Length: 212
Image (cartoon, rainbow, N blue to C red):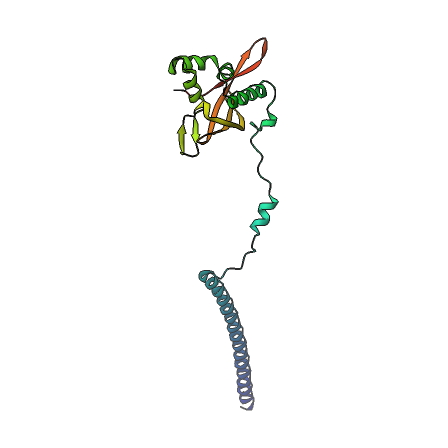
């Protein structure tokens, strides 16, 4: 009987110890879970604050660029490869442009006519202008008037000065641009320097003006 009671008391104490261990383990597990949840909540809060900054437009400030510095440091783009200044024009092209400039300023019609393409002369001078050389020259020097903001014929006799603008390669040869100063203001003119090829000679160039 006494042995039985001792066994029951031992079993009771063992049960108490086991319950205590289980209770402590549960408590520790609960603290760990709570700590993890708190960390998760903190991360979620930080992320939410970042999202809120983006929505409200609180972006990090960008470094300002000194535009003037960029402009002064950068070099202007080079002209096209087929673009020529006056001092770059040589040979027969230089000769014909020099004669054009001299004849225009001196208002010499007889020096101008030989510089032009024969087909152009036949079509415009002998056809459209009916042989009137004065009218033909006025049409040849027609161009865009800066004063009137439109295309305008120029009186050949009113030309005061001619200024070379540029020369550019084209399908027919070259396109040449001049600024013509007249009694009524400046006019921008454009002509074609048609290339004429021959089997036994150099390439020659003749002027073609506006048609019609």
